[in-house]
Length: 157
Image (cartoon, rainbow, N blue to C red; front, side, top):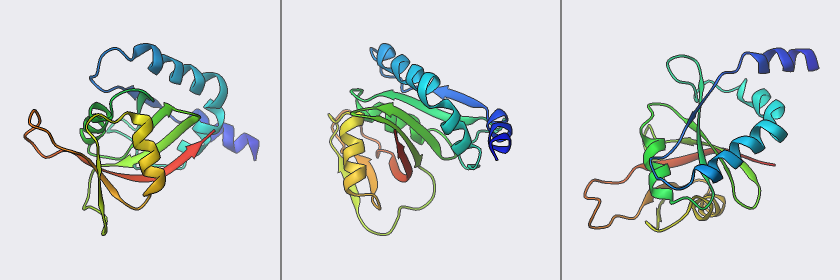
């Protein structure tokens, strides 16, 4: 069984993406280092079973974020993809979350995310309202409607 898992993991390709927000490169690099040094084998095995998070080249798209990073930019980045993406971050623990921004909103509530919230604060909201759709609260600087993001799966280590 381990041979099959390794073979599957060997066929998984990753593409790292980031929000346009500046000043969080060090935190993002810590997340990537944590993934690479402590979680990569398990993570690749999990991703081998997913198809919805891949781009046109078959690479799984990972949006890497510092847990203290403003959520607005991360949610906008997630919404740019025509498929689900994997958010990889570290708050009080290393967290991998599959997010969707396509398709119809789930029935039920749309939970507003404060425009000043961090990624870590948003992940706590997701934990509290796992069946909701999330949208950043609007403000005068952002006239267009904000992206609506839905949680699909979360794994913490």
